[in-house]
Each structure stands twice: as structure tokens, then as C-alpha cells.
Length: 111
Length: 118
Picture 1 (tube, rainbow over the protein chains, first blue to last red):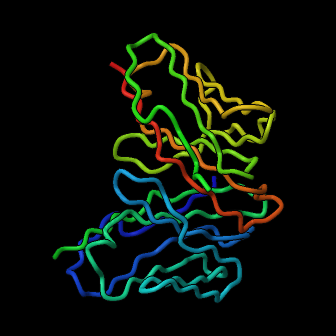
Picture 2: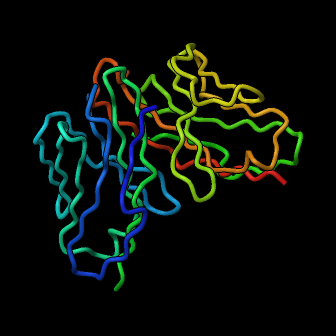
């Protein structure tokens, strides 16, 4: 059974601080790794998709890295702002083209 | 360009009734995915459809649940004889091409339908 683990489950961060969290996925049969941002009462919104080992993507203060050999991706947020409060989901696509979602990391920014 | 539309946004049903949830994908998208979010849980994949075809229904409960995506009109997720455990948020997403064709296909999500079973 393929499993995608995200840690921590939830995270409280002071406004202005930087933070990061992890998505772990099976290292075999890798095809792509997606990050989504899911605000309360809204629908998930795509942030990044990464396919190559060593990939690094950036969007404003948010960036992500990918290590397909060891099966993890990190999402970094620099200088957290209240509007960053959301659940961050990762989803893994394997070579059978199955998309498997993690349970998410809930990020709460304290003003 | 309108995003993914879902209706109704909120649906209340009594036990034993039927629930019909509708999803209109983004313009130009012919692939639809349904997900369920149970209270305090993450997204769980239910079914993946193309026009007139069910591609993967491995996440669908075997009984009472069905999905369709007709040639014309929205995709429908149908839950017969609802029970309290069906209360959840049901999200639909669409993409332009099959993940098998391009693994980088991003899914665009609708606002969800919140089903409450009394």
C-alpha cells in the first residue's frame, strides 16, 4: 500500500518567523510530487509540481525541494504572514499514474 | 474563465434519502476527480472520470455510491440511501489531460459540497 506522510500534522509559527515541513513518499516508482495550499472554507490550490530529483521551486516566500532517492520533499515559508495560515497538502504520483494524497500539515501563523 | 463549479454548496438530507452532487469542470477540461473529506481528515480519492468513462473508482465505496460524467452536462456523484457517516465535504477537481499523459497535470478544485445527513 502506497503511503504519503506529512509532518508535522499541525504547526504554530510566530508571524515573521520562517518554517518548513515535510512530505515523505515511496522512493520507488516516482513520477511527480505536487504541493497544494488549502485555506479554510476554500478549495485546494496548486502551488508546485516537481518531477526531477533535486528540483527546487519558488513562488514568492514559499519554496519547495525534492529528493526522490530518499523520498521526501520540504516546503519552506520565509517570513510567515497571517495569510499563510492554511493546510498544505502534498500529493505523489507514481509510475502507475496513481495520485496519492498526504493528510496535510495545518499551519497557523500567530500575530 | 470560470473555475470548477460545484452545486449545491450545502446539502442536507435525512437518512435513507438520495444525495446528488454536481460538478462542472473548467472549460476545456475533460477529466474529473471526486474526493471526500471526512471531519478532521484529509482528502480521500473516490473516483476519476473522463467523458462517459469511469477510469478509476478504487476509492468509491462498493455500495450506494455511483458517479457519472455524461457527454453533455456536469459530472454527478450520487449517494443512495444516505447514512450519517456520509456527512462530509465532497470536492471535485478537473484537469485538462490525463495524469498518464502528463504527470505534471495540475488539478483545479471546486469549492466543495458540504453534505449533512440528519
